[in-house]
Length: 113
Length: 112
Image 1 (cartoon, chains in turn green, yellow):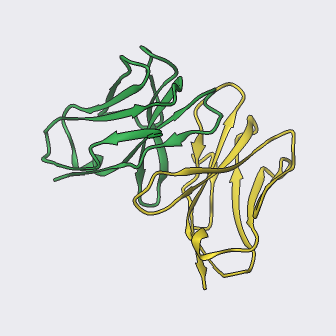
Image 2 (cartoon, one colour; image 1 turned 90 degrees about the horizontal axis):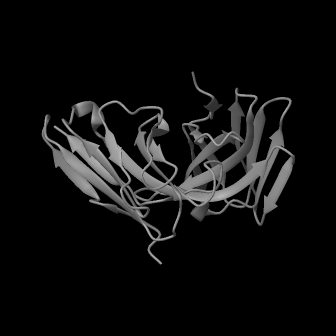
Image 3 (cartoon, chains in turn purple, yellow; image 1 turned 180 degrees about the vertical axis):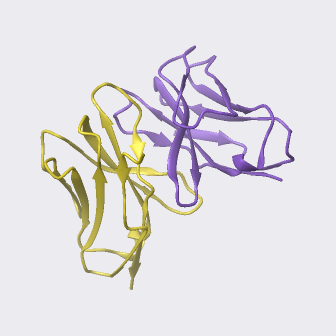
């Protein structure tokens, strides 16, 4: 049982380049989330989705876009990467409401140079 | 403005002793609290939770205590084991179905 899978695991981008991070979950969860983790900052919510076709902004949405075209996938896009977006990105999903246990992927380490 | 605070960035405990990790919150609407554990190069994993209708929840070596009047919760690990060495995140939410708010984490080191 794969759970939550993130692709890729590592990536180095040049400033101004674009990329998409893919998150896939096989648990039929309604809710999906993208977080970033920075040293000393904990986990901060970027965007989230409460169901297929829906997205909403989290705490730090600027510079990112998301799409949830299929229930099992949640994509995070960076249109023009900046060094401030160097971080570890985690995707998560949960079955019930947003105050229930979330299952996390293994993370994507992104470096923008 | 941090709504969930973990004021101790790190904690060292000897194997076999008790580890106590603390978490404070400012939002009185929070009514559900969770603890996550994170090993290096892995995603966080759910550890234990507590609803505001309770003041204690126990699961094996892990117990979470909630003091609503003080807006404080703590995670007790007894006895601590080297495999417990990880970063622990406290998270909180309200029944209005808003996303979890995480603290900055506490790095626990259990020394053999």
